[in-house]
Image (cartoon, rainbow, N blue to C red):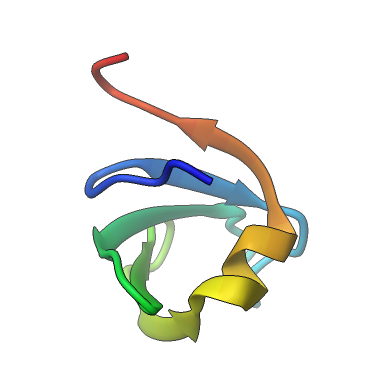
Length: 61
């Protein structure tokens, strides 16, 4: 799956704050994501994120 820095990922499940969109800050074996609603940052394994992606939103296609 082609995921790049500064992409916004729409995930299947909501964050407890109610947001579904996450900004990609780091790509590799793990992803560092920031919730676009509340600003909370998390590190998540690549396999778990790729399974839960609903849509990838790119600024510059």
